[in-house]
Length: 360
Ligand SMILES: O=C(O)C(=O)C[C@]1(C(=O)O)C=C[C@@H](O)C=C1
Image (cartoon, rainbow, N blue to C red; front, side, top):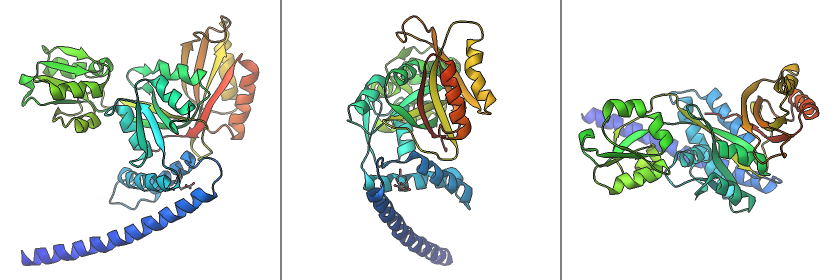
């Protein structure tokens, strides 16, 4: 025992010494970032550089920490360094405790001020009016598909996409009830209830499910009402201090939501990028094939194609608009050529931005 505590003391001395070194080095890094902030022209936040830093961390990580754990640590260091250069305000689809908030924190770390907005439209509006620097909006869910409002706003707004975030969605059942048998109603967003329906059918088949505006609102209600439970994420459980009595109850364990970061500008080249665009096609045979040919001809891979009715856009001439994601940055020659050819074929093309692919 005495030997144990002697060794423990030595190990902790080692940790204290390393923490001292880390602290010194992190502050040296912060000084460099601050100086970069003084020299840099234009935007201070550089998503392409952050993606490169995080990718290099994964490549060089010697372990035993996982690459993801090392990236989370460096993400926070960069978040604090960026705050020294420029304190950021990030708008997101609120209220506090939603998955959008988790996505914003995952990408921007703990330093920025987060501004919850009541609707996706408001996220765009606060950036356009200069009341936030960047915005985080959901764009597609692996089970539910596209988030139409975000796509419509990207079409009509001057904002660009400068980044993307993939957030695995884990729904939890949270309640102040001691056991499942005490739960008399379950609040959640309709989509989340749908994403957990098999689990709910198996475990709480007779308990009424009550759809509400957001998962965070569900958690707020469950925190205040005896017998109530909510299906929501970790952030909501933490915000309302609600015990989780069943974790990860989603039917599809790979359920993921993709978010985009909107801003007044897109991003520079990071070396592993994506470009999003929207274009129109006439309602005649072969029109879509014609639109996509420039990508195939130039060896540009397409990672997503989504069509939406061209509501209120371009008069009655165009019936559909197509949202297309391609691999590569718009400044890379093959991508630039494909976009140029597309402009000759489509009635309308809008580049929504080039940005680094989500790193983790
Ligand atoms: O390289 C820069 O441009 C920096 O400002 C430094 C740094 C970093 O901490 O690594 C900080 C903020 C930027 O978004 C990108 C990277």
